[in-house]
Length: 300
Image (cartoon, rainbow, N blue to C red):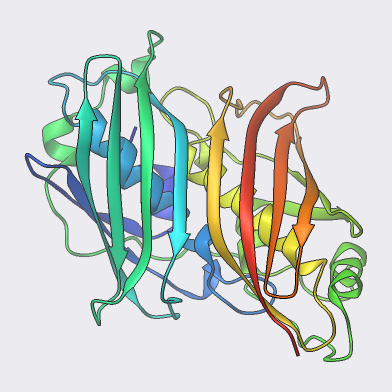
């Protein structure tokens, strides 16, 4: 479900507009959303991408019902830059009372396509007081001013040009270089640099009205994990980009104080493209989310 709550505020997303076809949202991308390289990747705008698709289905109901994302697929276009105001538009492709499928496109101020995607949301039976208290009419009133960036450590360290990807990840895990603003925002730590293993400590602002990590925040987390897994296969002077991301939502990870682990794996690596995956679990071994991503490489 798409609400102007903590996740949208943290990622500077707002200005909801509802139409018969779907909804639209805006996002101001800023320095708090760059990675350890100082670049904006798909995880920086994943909250908007997920919210505009799940919200297209949620707003078709007259009353605030519980819906969750079950699948999200994104492909990247033009890379956004700090200072861009992005615009996302969704349209329902299919809808019934059990689930809905929506397409979406994100563009920048120059009307270049930043991202395209498709997603499926499902209606669930559970509810909470926070959900029942939502005023959909108020939420759908457009507000041109977008939320201000959160106050986090936005340090981006200089990276030794002679380091390969695993050396970069080792430096992050040891605190030799900054983990980057996006990892700070997501409370993500690199624990192992070979096939990267990461941990996150879910923050209260990440929760949706059902008390679980919001679907867009999940997409940002697993997308960033996949990007770091792609970093592991760079040589000195290589560049990598998160080109495609598919997220499969199995269960809703709760925001209840437990840490979550993201284990990544390499499916294949070539000169120009690689495929990696990331799986989110808790200490009890519960599988919450799996993501598969294509990484584009520019070899030095």
